[in-house]
Length: 298
Image (cartoon, rainbow, N blue to C red; front, side, top):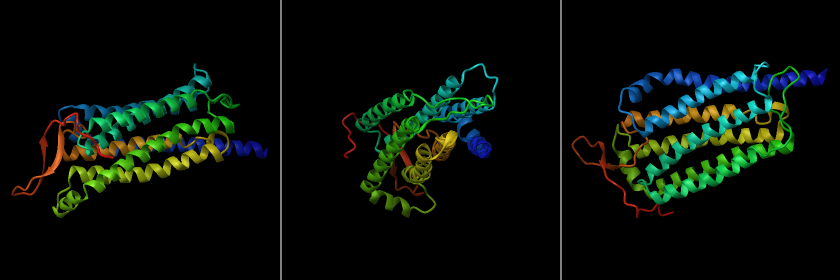
C-alpha cells in the first residue's frame, strides 16, 4: 500500500512540473504579446524575427502535444515512440536556443567568422554526443499500469540521459566565458557607455541579459541534472520540460529586449555599436562589413 502511495505521489510531482512548464511558457507569452506585436509583427522581417518566432512558437506547439501525450492512454503511438518524440522536442527546442545565444556572442565579437566557425564546431561535437547518449540508452522506459506513458529509467539509463543536459551546461559555460572575456577587453568602452545617462547601449544589454540568463539557467540545469542521479521513477529527468520551457521563455525575453532597442534585433552581421559624440550623445550603429581576417583574440 505504501509503495502505491509513493508511486502516486511521484507521478503527481511529475505532472506538477509538466504543468508548471507549460504555464510559464504560455503565461509569459501573454505578458509579452503586446511587445511582440509592436517590435516584431509591425516591423520588417529579418533573420532575428524568424528565429524569435521559431523559438517561441515551435516550443509552444510541441510542448502542448507532448504534454497531452502524458494524459492520453488511448494514443495510437506506442509509449516508446511518445518518449522519443518528447526527447526530440527537447533537443530541437534547446538547439534553437543555442543558435540564438551563439549569435549573441557572434555580435559581441564584431561578427568574427573565426569565432563563429569555432562555436559551430563545438555545437556539432556536443550535438553528436547528445544524440548518441539520448538514443542509445537501453532499458528503463515503460508506461504505467494505468495506461499512461511516462518515461522512467533505471539508474544506468538515467545517467546516460543526463549527458544531454550536461553538454548544454558545458556550452552555456563556454558562452558565458566568452562574454566575460569580451567585457574585460572592452571595459573602458563600457565605462564610457555607463557615463551616458539615460542611454543603454546594445553591448550593455547583451552582457547584462546574458549574465542574468546564465545565472538562472545554470542553477535550473544543475538541479535538473541532479534529478537524473538522485530522484526516483518519473522524477528522474522530471525537470527537463520545466528547464526547457524556462530556457525558451528567457531567450524570448532576451530577443524582445534587443528588438526594443533596434529593428534588426540579434541579426547584427552588418552592425557594430560605437559611441557617437553628437549633440544628443546617443548610441548609433554604423554599417560595416567585417573582414574574414578578423579574429576574436582569445
